Length: 262
Image (cartoon, rainbow, N blue to C red; front, top):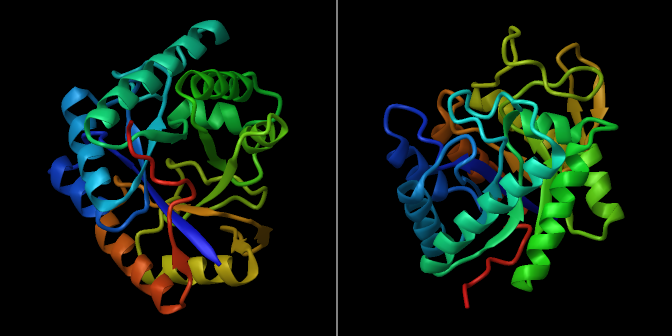
């Protein structure tokens, strides 16, 4: 069995965002790099992609509604045509910088409100992200995979369009009985105890299930595990998680081939 570890990076969060990104890049195998929509700039993208290339970590575009003031929590009622253009611009900005670092963008994961909208049944955002990914992969001549919430509309739409679709689960967030994430504003939404997180991950890898916040069981089939950088103690959690997975002799590797720029 193989599992990927991913984290959202280059977002400028925490007391020392540079040290946070560097520490997480020593643990994860895929980096979702903020590329200007909700956070990130040329300096952060250069730094993160350079470290990712050095450490053999896959680079993904962490695209968002253009909402830097609200950290990607607001759509600002953009049309799908405008959203597609925003996504393509974020792809291109990150990929150009990644190329200068000796690597390339190989997947996309939406951020914040865009992630929630794209993973919701019946949304137009999933189709828009897929259209942008297909258009971009045709322009660069290499596959662009889609990383999204396990079993979600985004993953299903990507599969229907013959793109590589990767299901992710969350190490540091609790789940509702309906299989979604407990809202961050609710008590118990975050998992900060490494022991609790490790119990969850072992059960997920062994039985493909997660215990919801009410104790019920949810079927979850994940190829990638997400650790949020803004979770308190994220680096310690990530290191302990990787050590525990290694001890179980589960292979940890990116879900895409780490691409070298031409």
